[in-house]
Image (cartoon, rainbow, N blue to C red; front, side, top):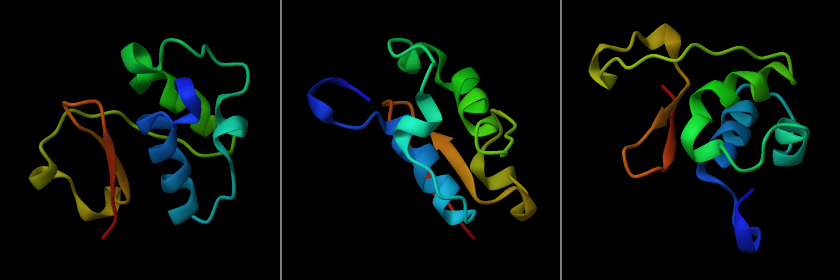
Length: 89
């Protein structure tokens, strides 16, 4: 979570990705015990740790969206402005 109770975009995206996959979780469950201050810099590596807590896995790739095979969806995209978006077929 970020200051003032506003959810971190990456954490919010991970919660949504879990929801789409039928995994009930919360931001607190995904992030408890992980560094609170490094999500912006190390979000890609922390995402894998967070997802493993709920028996999910991930693969980080820098492929253009157009080349991403449909069997890889849903996917969490990291946008250049720091936001995330879940792409679901």
